[in-house]
Image 1 (cartoon, helix red, strand yellow):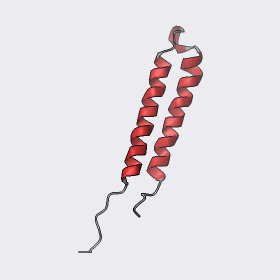
Image 2: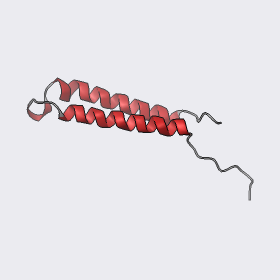
Image 3: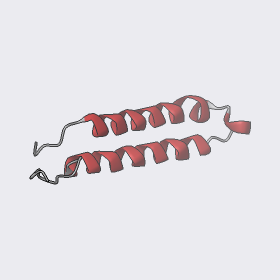
Length: 71
């Protein structure tokens, strides 16, 4: 048996950023659903909402790839 330290793969800041990214993704989907045009073909459904969702996914990837502060 090896005497390696059992540490979590992510730090607290990583988990906070993941929650922020998830919240941004949900906000983007909410913005897309607020579009009043038929089938979501307005500015909110085609432009603003998807941009917010992509920003949320970028935050998620950054939170996953970022090294924990304690290592």
